[in-house]
Amino acid sequence: MKNIIEKLEERPLVFDGAIGTVLYSKGVFINRCFEEICLTEPQLISQIHRDYVAAGADVIETNTFGANRVKLKNFGLAGKIVEINEKAVRLAKEAAGDKALVAGSVGPCLNPGQLLNITNSKNIEFAFQECVNALENAGADCILLETFSNIEELSIAIGQAKSANLPIIASFTVNDSGETVLGNKVEKVVAELDKDDRVDVIGLNCGIGPSPLFNAVERALPLTDKPFIVMPNAGMPKETDGRMLYLVNPEYFTEYSKKFVQLGVRGIGGCCGTTPEHISLTAKAVHSLSGVKKHIEIKAVTPETIKVKACSMSEKSHFGRKLAYGQKVTSVEILPPRSLDLSAMLEKVKKCKVAEIDAINIPDGPRASARISPMITSIAIKEHIGIEPVLHYCCRDRNLIGMQSDFLGGCAVGINNFLIITGDPPKLGDYPDVTGVFDVDSIGLTQMAYNLNHGIDIGGNPINPPANILIGVGVNPCAVDLVAEIERFRQKIEAGAEYAITQPVFDSEDLFKFLEKINKFPKTIPIVAGIWPLTSFKNAEFMKNEVPGVEVPDSVLVLMSKCKSKEDGLKSGIEIARKIKEEISDNVAGFQVSAPFGRVELALQIF
Image 1: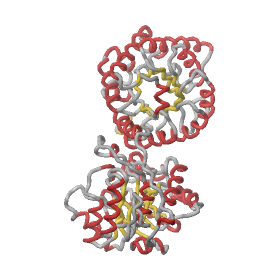
Image 2: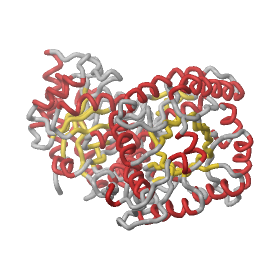
Image 3: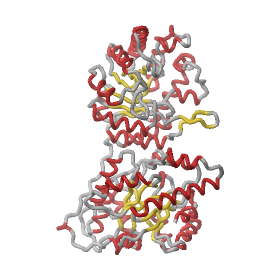
Image 4: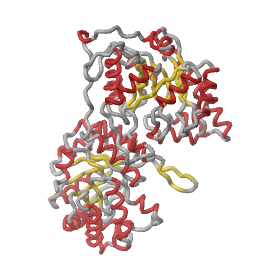
């Protein structure tokens, strides 16, 4: 088997998640020595390892984070250091088999904020030596020094780990500001570890959740060419009914995991609060990003190949005409039903028609769940109610030939307003074992639609008459990696996008900053702002923590937390949405308002 450095160079690896969190969830009290459980309840540790391997982890850690002389002494177990470490490696290797590597976990001897001095440095040096020797003798594949906040102590640990002749991962922890508890900035620590020839891999773990850790990683990555791994907590714990819970769910965690990999991180795992569920979704998403699937290139049509006259934006539909003439557009997002009965959904659409809403947005397999075909839903809306559908169309479920057929078929029956999005992987929805197609992403699909509008199909064959697709795209003004989001948006415009709809906006200033940047593009397109009327504090927390791509500011959470009743929550949510709509009205081309939980009346109140 290749060593971990070789594997990290080949593709991003997925590390496992927390052990302590899972032990606690299984009834192990926090005042126990978790490392001793390797001896007293080995089957429990083995099962946790097996669960992580089954979840798709490429690397699992031994249950030895605190298995050093200094920490074990507090439990009267200093005499069992070698026994615990060696047993932990054997349990991990048995569970890993030939499917995963085993990292020997070594945590700090000092408590957070505790200083190194002449008195304790020798004891600490000896403690690390004992751990590392035992881990190596038992067959660990690498040494993972993790969660260090004192960089001097980390240097001592590195020195002892080097004697084991195994690859060394040196991982430290920072706060929301990107500093260790002793005030060392992430840039300083990474620069020192980059110069240290003893260190093979640099990492950041624990301390904070995915979002603030992403900011620290952005600052750190340009400072080193060594492989970099990240293992965030599942957010910050919050007390709920007397229990400390981590509110970052697996779906949200996975969304950030993909961002980390796209940023250049070579290893992603989880720390406190993460579980096999987090790692399972992360593994499927990250493995799909590892170069296994490459998008098909859709080449732009050239002037000499165009033989037909394309429709103008104003000729394509009522919605397109209003956008072309600078008139405000309105739309309401309504989900396709899970039932075969369309009548309840059509009644909601009818209310929007009466309220003179311009269009109905129809999501395409939202959160990768099973609903009636959005194309069929759109046809029913157009035929029975007579209002224009905006058909969300994602790249997940169909190959390129099928997507081209849908676009042409839609135009043939009068469904031609497409909002093109890449789409959530099915592993983020109700069917985690289903695979996505993703022949192209939203940029490539936008180019295909533009080509069809100019009479050229994906094979370069002429189409006459050409398609008349009104090409919409999605954009996220609050994206984690805003630079990348803006660049992708520029590419969508170049590919032929004619308008864009944003993710729900909860912070006007974020939208203004985004608009200021994109207004510098050589070409701009109308921006329709997404609005979501919150219904309760719990709904606001859900949107913030569990809906990828949505950012709810703390100020909004504070306002919603003050609501004492269900009615107060609805009233406050509508007031917040109306206020945002009013603040941004002069800067956008219109509004798409979501109907939370299918309650169209709430969406209509925003207008």
